[in-house]
Length: 196
Image 1 (cartoon, one colour):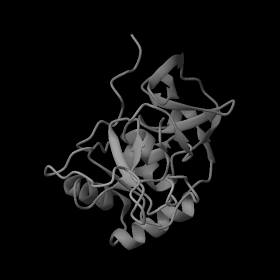
Image 2 (spheres, helix red, strand yellow):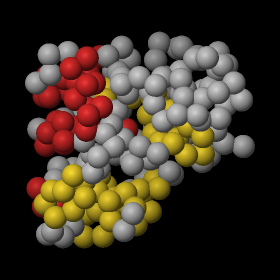
Image 3 (cartoon, one colour):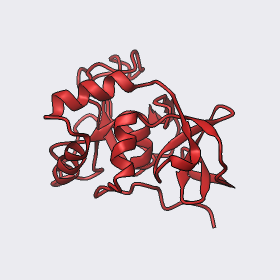
Protein backbone atom coordinates (compact mmCIF):
# COMPACT_ATOMS: atom_id res chain seq x y z
CA UNK A 1 0.00 0.00 0.00
CA UNK A 2 1.34 3.42 -0.95
CA UNK A 3 1.35 6.38 1.41
CA UNK A 4 -0.58 9.46 0.35
CA UNK A 5 2.55 11.61 0.26
CA UNK A 6 3.42 12.14 -3.40
CA UNK A 7 2.87 15.68 -4.69
CA UNK A 8 1.71 16.65 -8.17
CA UNK A 9 2.70 19.89 -9.95
CA UNK A 10 -0.77 21.15 -9.02
CA UNK A 11 0.14 20.77 -5.33
CA UNK A 12 -2.21 17.83 -4.76
CA UNK A 13 -1.06 15.09 -2.39
CA UNK A 14 -1.76 11.65 -3.86
CA UNK A 15 -1.04 7.97 -3.13
CA UNK A 16 1.08 6.28 -5.79
CA UNK A 17 3.98 3.80 -5.63
CA UNK A 18 6.40 6.11 -7.48
CA UNK A 19 8.66 7.97 -5.06
CA UNK A 20 10.45 10.55 -7.20
CA UNK A 21 13.81 12.31 -6.98
CA UNK A 22 13.03 15.08 -4.47
CA UNK A 23 11.87 15.03 -0.85
CA UNK A 24 10.18 17.82 1.09
CA UNK A 25 7.57 18.90 3.60
CA UNK A 26 4.86 21.41 4.56
CA UNK A 27 4.68 20.50 8.25
CA UNK A 28 2.63 17.71 9.86
CA UNK A 29 -0.26 16.92 7.53
CA UNK A 30 -1.23 13.44 8.75
CA UNK A 31 -3.03 11.97 11.75
CA UNK A 32 -1.89 9.11 14.00
CA UNK A 33 -3.08 6.61 11.37
CA UNK A 34 -1.06 8.16 8.54
CA UNK A 35 -4.08 9.75 6.83
CA UNK A 36 -3.66 13.21 5.31
CA UNK A 37 -5.89 15.64 7.23
CA UNK A 38 -4.74 18.99 5.80
CA UNK A 39 -2.83 20.27 2.79
CA UNK A 40 -0.32 22.36 4.74
CA UNK A 41 0.56 23.32 8.31
CA UNK A 42 3.29 25.91 7.81
CA UNK A 43 4.05 28.47 5.10
CA UNK A 44 7.61 27.16 4.74
CA UNK A 45 7.21 24.55 1.99
CA UNK A 46 10.65 23.13 1.26
CA UNK A 47 12.16 20.68 -1.21
CA UNK A 48 15.11 18.58 -0.09
CA UNK A 49 17.66 16.04 -1.20
CA UNK A 50 16.60 12.40 -0.86
CA UNK A 51 19.81 11.77 1.09
CA UNK A 52 21.69 14.17 3.33
CA UNK A 53 24.65 13.37 5.61
CA UNK A 54 23.48 9.78 6.05
CA UNK A 55 20.40 10.79 8.01
CA UNK A 56 17.54 8.31 8.21
CA UNK A 57 14.13 9.23 9.49
CA UNK A 58 12.91 7.05 12.35
CA UNK A 59 9.27 6.12 11.91
CA UNK A 60 9.23 6.43 8.12
CA UNK A 61 7.68 9.29 6.16
CA UNK A 62 4.75 9.78 8.56
CA UNK A 63 5.84 9.38 12.18
CA UNK A 64 3.15 10.43 14.69
CA UNK A 65 3.25 14.15 15.49
CA UNK A 66 6.17 14.94 13.15
CA UNK A 67 6.30 16.51 9.71
CA UNK A 68 4.93 14.57 6.76
CA UNK A 69 7.63 13.50 4.34
CA UNK A 70 6.54 14.33 0.80
CA UNK A 71 8.00 13.13 -2.50
CA UNK A 72 8.14 14.88 -5.89
CA UNK A 73 8.97 13.46 -9.31
CA UNK A 74 11.63 16.15 -9.80
CA UNK A 75 12.50 19.70 -8.74
CA UNK A 76 10.29 21.25 -11.45
CA UNK A 77 7.33 19.42 -9.86
CA UNK A 78 8.25 20.69 -6.37
CA UNK A 79 8.70 24.25 -7.64
CA UNK A 80 5.36 24.19 -9.51
CA UNK A 81 3.64 22.96 -6.33
CA UNK A 82 4.97 26.04 -4.52
CA UNK A 83 8.00 24.58 -2.72
CA UNK A 84 11.48 26.12 -2.64
CA UNK A 85 14.95 24.69 -1.91
CA UNK A 86 15.74 23.80 1.72
CA UNK A 87 18.25 26.12 3.41
CA UNK A 88 19.94 23.20 5.19
CA UNK A 89 20.39 20.25 2.81
CA UNK A 90 20.36 22.44 -0.33
CA UNK A 91 22.02 25.54 1.05
CA UNK A 92 23.75 26.66 -2.16
CA UNK A 93 20.51 26.10 -4.13
CA UNK A 94 18.56 28.04 -1.50
CA UNK A 95 20.99 30.97 -1.54
CA UNK A 96 21.02 31.28 -5.34
CA UNK A 97 17.22 30.89 -5.52
CA UNK A 98 16.73 33.51 -2.78
CA UNK A 99 19.10 35.96 -4.48
CA UNK A 100 17.17 35.71 -7.75
CA UNK A 101 13.85 36.46 -5.98
CA UNK A 102 15.14 39.64 -4.35
CA UNK A 103 13.59 38.54 -1.03
CA UNK A 104 15.46 39.62 2.12
CA UNK A 105 15.31 36.13 3.64
CA UNK A 106 13.37 32.89 4.05
CA UNK A 107 10.42 34.47 5.87
CA UNK A 108 9.81 37.03 3.12
CA UNK A 109 10.26 34.41 0.39
CA UNK A 110 7.88 31.97 2.10
CA UNK A 111 5.22 34.68 2.58
CA UNK A 112 5.50 35.59 -1.10
CA UNK A 113 5.26 31.98 -2.31
CA UNK A 114 2.39 31.26 0.08
CA UNK A 115 0.38 34.17 -1.36
CA UNK A 116 0.98 32.82 -4.89
CA UNK A 117 -0.15 29.24 -4.32
CA UNK A 118 -2.23 27.44 -5.44
CA UNK A 119 -3.26 30.12 -7.92
CA UNK A 120 -3.08 29.68 -11.67
CA UNK A 121 -2.07 32.69 -13.75
CA UNK A 122 -2.25 33.29 -17.48
CA UNK A 123 0.85 33.90 -19.56
CA UNK A 124 1.91 33.44 -23.17
CA UNK A 125 3.33 29.94 -23.68
CA UNK A 126 6.15 31.22 -25.89
CA UNK A 127 7.42 33.35 -22.96
CA UNK A 128 7.70 30.51 -20.44
CA UNK A 129 11.09 29.18 -19.29
CA UNK A 130 12.10 25.53 -19.21
CA UNK A 131 10.89 23.88 -16.01
CA UNK A 132 7.59 25.78 -15.84
CA UNK A 133 4.30 23.87 -15.64
CA UNK A 134 1.06 24.68 -17.41
CA UNK A 135 -2.38 23.06 -17.32
CA UNK A 136 -4.03 21.82 -20.52
CA UNK A 137 -7.43 20.11 -20.26
CA UNK A 138 -6.87 19.64 -16.51
CA UNK A 139 -3.49 17.91 -16.88
CA UNK A 140 -0.05 19.29 -15.90
CA UNK A 141 2.45 19.73 -18.74
CA UNK A 142 6.13 20.63 -18.36
CA UNK A 143 7.64 23.26 -20.66
CA UNK A 144 10.96 22.05 -22.10
CA UNK A 145 12.53 23.70 -25.13
CA UNK A 146 10.17 23.50 -28.09
CA UNK A 147 8.05 20.82 -26.42
CA UNK A 148 5.52 20.19 -23.70
CA UNK A 149 5.75 16.95 -21.68
CA UNK A 150 2.74 15.38 -19.94
CA UNK A 151 3.50 14.82 -16.24
CA UNK A 152 2.75 11.48 -14.54
CA UNK A 153 3.92 10.28 -11.10
CA UNK A 154 6.51 8.01 -12.75
CA UNK A 155 7.84 10.35 -15.42
CA UNK A 156 6.74 12.10 -18.56
CA UNK A 157 4.30 10.12 -20.70
CA UNK A 158 3.57 12.14 -23.82
CA UNK A 159 5.06 15.02 -25.73
CA UNK A 160 3.62 17.69 -27.96
CA UNK A 161 5.00 20.75 -29.72
CA UNK A 162 4.94 24.07 -27.92
CA UNK A 163 2.41 26.41 -29.50
CA UNK A 164 1.76 30.15 -29.40
CA UNK A 165 -1.14 31.03 -27.14
CA UNK A 166 -1.96 32.23 -23.64
CA UNK A 167 -2.04 29.30 -21.19
CA UNK A 168 -2.78 28.65 -17.52
CA UNK A 169 0.54 28.53 -15.63
CA UNK A 170 0.81 26.59 -12.38
CA UNK A 171 4.36 27.52 -11.35
CA UNK A 172 4.22 30.54 -8.98
CA UNK A 173 5.27 33.91 -10.49
CA UNK A 174 8.21 34.27 -8.08
CA UNK A 175 9.54 30.87 -9.14
CA UNK A 176 8.91 31.69 -12.81
CA UNK A 177 11.27 34.66 -12.53
CA UNK A 178 13.94 32.39 -10.98
CA UNK A 179 13.58 29.82 -13.77
CA UNK A 180 13.62 32.55 -16.42
CA UNK A 181 17.01 33.65 -15.03
CA UNK A 182 18.36 30.17 -15.86
CA UNK A 183 18.45 28.82 -12.29
CA UNK A 184 18.93 25.12 -11.66
CA UNK A 185 19.87 23.42 -8.44
CA UNK A 186 21.81 20.38 -7.29
CA UNK A 187 18.86 17.97 -7.62
CA UNK A 188 17.33 17.03 -10.96
CA UNK A 189 15.20 19.89 -12.25
CA UNK A 190 13.61 17.52 -14.75
CA UNK A 191 13.26 13.74 -14.29
CA UNK A 192 15.42 11.75 -16.74
CA UNK A 193 12.36 9.77 -17.94
CA UNK A 194 11.50 12.19 -20.78
CA UNK A 195 10.41 9.66 -23.40
CA UNK A 196 12.60 8.41 -26.24
